[in-house]
Length: 444
Ligand code: UDX
Image (cartoon, rainbow, N blue to C red; front, side, top):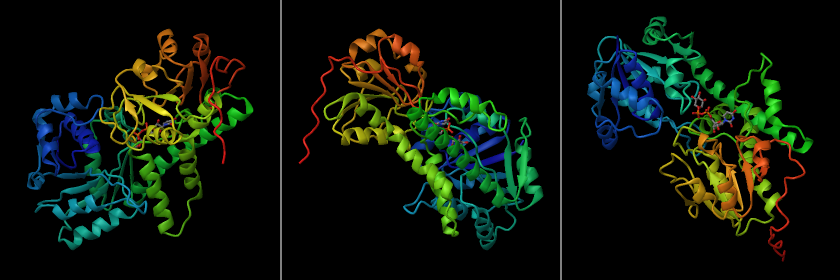
């Protein structure tokens, strides 16, 4: 069993540390924020991620949380798990990565610096050079990107599709691979640049699939097809597969938006215009706004209309609001003059939402008097949304299903007007005549 040091007690660092500890390794997690370390020592996990609290608790004896960089000096592996947010130019901000390199203490033997953070291609080369300049030529370097999806991270770590390891030295790659020996994992060994690119390309491809199916959904709407059936039929082709073909109101999260910008920027810095990726990003931006058109179709101008946003997190099973489509949607609704009430079962800090959104504690509070309810995140709690008490509470029985969570037939049978993303509409999908529409504003 190895001694593993981890820089960064964020989501990636904690998941990685907890999982390595569970595999039997001794783990030292170091962060620079004192409150974070104090809370972790007290057994508190600063985010919502299934199984992480249990893993940290179960492996307490093998986990050390520290502020002191010298505590990782005797680790054989030094994992870099700090964040690499976008800069104004869209490039990845590597300042925290370089701080780690600068802060490395005196190290004996051949410890290996392992990059888990997502970084531009070429970063490993630069760090290798930086280590040599600092007199740390005896420190190995490897790229070992993470492919963990929020809400499923522990399972993704323990049952990986593959473990990618890029290294300058075969022995370093073998040593990193040995850390995962307890897992049934296929290891892809390669050069450092290729490992860095695998991570960026995998994310870009997943985003491409999402924007692709979202555009197919939009074409389904104008041609009368149903994207749920289309995705099923397409995904059964073994060359294509079923994953990441769920149409909706766009992707968000801490990875996709930032990594797509970073890859686009990386390409253009080298003189290459990555046209397809640019389109993927733009399609996603437009997709977040499509709900506005759907609401207007049913309600007319949105000024003064009450809209319930159901779900705020960028996807279910996480409290992460980073780049969530809910933020763009809420901003657009407020700009149209709508009254926005929002609910989410987990998000405790909707700090990213624009001011003016009222966040309430229950679905019923959110839909009370609402002209429309919009499913923004496909939380399981919303599966029974189309029920009598919800219909009775609403001013208009209109459900816009931004994630195609519900069965349109069942929803309509409960007396709702239903509209999903890329799904067929039917003749009865109109609000009752009694609904008074506001007059169109006069144009001056
Ligand atoms: C992603 C990658 O899956 C992971 O490998 C990488 O390391 C980090 O980025 P994550 O951001 O946690 O993980 O979420 P993911 O489950 O991939 O979903 C990303 C976004 O795409 C969400 O907003 C989700 O709602 C959306 N999505 C996903 C769709 O709109 N349709 C789909 O079919 C799948």
